[in-house]
Structure formats: structure tokens, C-alpha cells
Image 1 (cartoon, one colour):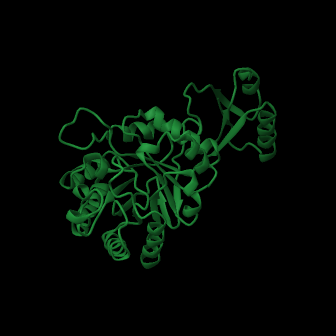
Image 2 (cartoon, rainbow, N blue to C red):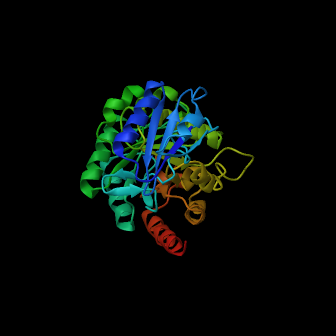
Image 3 (spheres, helix red, strand yellow):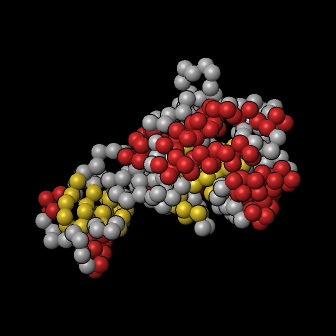
Length: 332
């Protein structure tokens, strides 16, 4: 249920109304915009008397929400959410360029790539320390050592770190990480999502391989319902009948998610296509359809990468892509 308060409502009266709702056993999500305040009521609202609430002199309107996702619903929060990562802002017209190797391999590699992508225009560094792989025999990442190497690259460049967490038990290793990424395979790892909701850190939540947009939003809801509103949604392609690409990049998801939710939406064209030469055109298309950022794999030596070299751009290719993306942003 949504309760819209009249403009100029006194703080004391607003607090009294919120306390009343909480006494009824409801959670209250408060969204304060430039012109109005919206109270999102979470819980069993079936016994709430809408006529009584509408009769209050501070209430503009009351509306029931049928969608199961509440906290991330744009009806609860009409204005775009802007996620701050240090000096970097994502959403609400702010565009994030996240780049780096699929996996951290050694200090020389991660520092070199970090410096290269920063020079090209990236404002966050991605790199995998923990790698979920389909085969148990493939490279699984450097784990804790990889985290430390990412910190060295951050110190060298000033770029905030984005890296994937796979297990609740690994949370202590991520205390000094700027953005925690939840990969596609863990999108519905609800125990992990709830724990991430208690961290307060920005969470980059990737859509699962075969998950609907509603399921993605419900996963975001797990994080937000646990107290963390710093969620960034990521479209990374879904599994379809495509036989030439790794996945199918669902770009229609970007404007639809913006319509449904106030959370920022970024796009990962690297995992979506699996082919380096396809990354640039899909990144440009994603920019044109209004995404809030791009996360792209960049490696100094793709043929010899320990993970996903086939979809990784070289630093010079990434620099050229950034120029094209900025040109498209200037048009739209």
C-alpha cells in the first residue's frame, strides 16, 4: 500500500502517522522527493482502512500495490535511486563505466589493466577473485589472494573495486570491498542475499541465466527488506535458443526495469555475448536504450587469459568503445 502525503506536511504529524502504521505491525518505507513524500506500507495491509487514512488532513492519496516486490518498486519510490561508491555515482543520470579482467591472475596483470581502463575512462575496477565455474577443473580464482591484489590495484589507481562474492562464509574477506557482486548463479541464493542486506554495502545483482524480471526484482527485494537499499541491477543475458552467442542480451529489460523499479540498471555485454567482437555493438545498443552503466571485461592478453579470454577486450579496444559510448550518451 502507498500513502502519499500532502506537500508541506509537518514532520511531527508525519512521524505520528508512521508510528501509527508501525503499531499496526507494518513496515514503513519512506521516500522523500522534491515535491511529495511517499510512505510505502509493507506487510499485511488487508485490514488497513483506506477510507480512514484518506480522510486524514495530511494525506493526498492512498493506493494498494498488487506487485509482490515493494521496496524496489517505483511506486514506492518515484525518484531514481542514486548509488554512491566513493566519489562515483550510479543512476539518476549518472553513468558508471566498470571494467577489468574476468579473473585476477597476478599483481602485474591487475595493476596494468586497472591503469589502462582508468586512462580510458572507467571509474570502477572489476576483477574476479572467486570464480564460479561450470567445470570443477577450471580455474576457480585466487580467492583471498585475489582480494588483496585488487586492493593493491585500487591503491595504485584510486578506482573502487567491484568483485563477486559466492558464499556467506567469505563475507569477512569483503569488508574492505567497495561493491559486492552477486553473480547470475547466486541470484536466488536467498541466505546470501539476506546477509548482504545487513552489510549496507552497494550490491551489484546480476540476473540469473533463465530468470524473469520479476524474479530479479524479488531477489533485490531480499536485500532491501534486510535493510540495504544500495542495489544495482544488472542485465547480463539469458539462455535462449541462440546457437552462435553465449547468451541472448535482453535489452528490452532495461527500460522495463526502469519502469518497474527506481534502482539503477547496468548491462554486461561481455557475458551476454561471449565474443569480444560482439561486445562493442551491444554496449553501444545498451547505452542507447538508457542503461545506467556498463560492466565490461578487459584483459591485457586475452588469448592467454585464465578465464573468459574469448569475450575480453584489449585495453585499446576498450578505450575506443568508451569514446563511442560517450558519443551516444551525448546524443540521447
